[in-house]
Image (cartoon, rainbow, N blue to C red; front, side, top):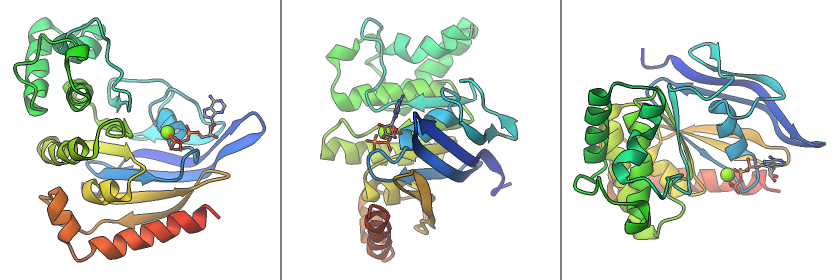
Length: 253
Ligand SMILES: Nc1ncnc2c1ncn2[C@@H]1O[C@H](COP(=O)(O)OP(=O)(O)OP(=O)(O)O)[C@@H](O)[C@H]1O
Ligand SMILES: [Mg+2]
């Protein structure tokens, strides 16, 4: 069912001390969709993602995956972090394998999943390298491979491409478009970049701040397969960009 809801945040509120960080946030993530969240710095995007991962509990409201409350991290949900989150003392192979070995997955299955994830992100041949021997873009590919190898139902990505330069970022966006068209997992992807959100997403949730809230949810009606340049050339690209930009600026007032 194309429109069934995988992950649902209902009336989610979060306070840190006396400050309301998120107020009455409702986000439905459809099974198999690529959902981007954009919003100003400090509006609570990471906080919301941590609640989707079960790392943090809402003070009010609920987060459910397939109607089951998410109360702790679980194998069906994987997170890809901005700072890669790799272990410097482990090789590429062992970094990717780590979550599977934690779960006592049989060794042959670990090996086949790790090798195919490494292949998928274009790192075949680098299995025995250590993170310090890799560029930022390659490290982020390792982070992506690790999330993919776990074969989660939902992948949560918190500004995963923010630490790499503009050119590598576009290459990673294209790779993610290709990989996602293969795996068709449900993805929630946070970004500061409206361009990146339009390039990747089926729908974009626009957040405002003080308190953090959902301002609007926008459909990206640009056909797939997409590339960075085909999206930029699409007639709906510029109007969509302008409309999200004005939502963000008026939400910041
Ligand atoms: N553990 C915490 N204790 C207290 N305040 C916190 C904590 N975590 C986040 N905050 C505050 O909550 C607000 C939202 O933070 P959050 O990191 O979710 O924002 P964000 O939208 O991800 O920002 P950015 O775009 O800069 O990453 C900020 O004001 C932040 O200072
Ligand atoms: Mg953040």
